[in-house]
Length: 201
Ligand SMILES: [Ca+2]
Ligand SMILES: [Ca+2]
Image 1: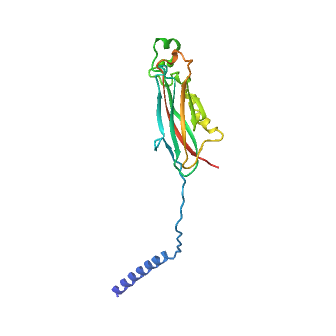
Image 2: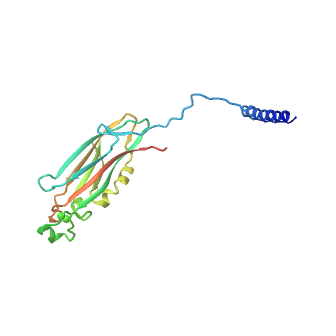
Image 3: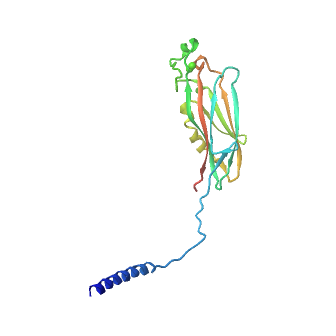
């Protein structure tokens, strides 16, 4: 009698297990194929090398006959969405690099290297051109350069690069010739970054 009872219990367990397995298939399933959520792209190519869009630039030795210059970049929207172009000036630092005797007479901050103590940026003006048209200009003091993004944003109409469209960005710099001994040995460092911003309508 004992043996029979054991096998009945075993059967009962298997039965309820099958029930749950069966239950698990009581679902409806519909498959919808070929769904795609596509995200458009904004990709800016600068000078043919996409990826690294920040290029450091150093202006020094002003006064040795070099008082202006320019650099041209080719910028291209290689994405699939139109974007608003801008270029920002980042990490602007005017260095003092110490003072010699004539500079000491007119400059009270003579740190070496003396970051943010230099005066050179007050006399350097940069102007940005897109395809030869003047768009934005700024002096290269820390304060003025930090406002350049606002200048780009206020251009009307904005600089739009459509997918596949490229443009020449020229940055021209000139040194005012009314500088004095306060800029002796001073130097100016900065980075530039180029960006495309999605247009939200
Ligand atoms: Ca100096
Ligand atoms: Ca100085």
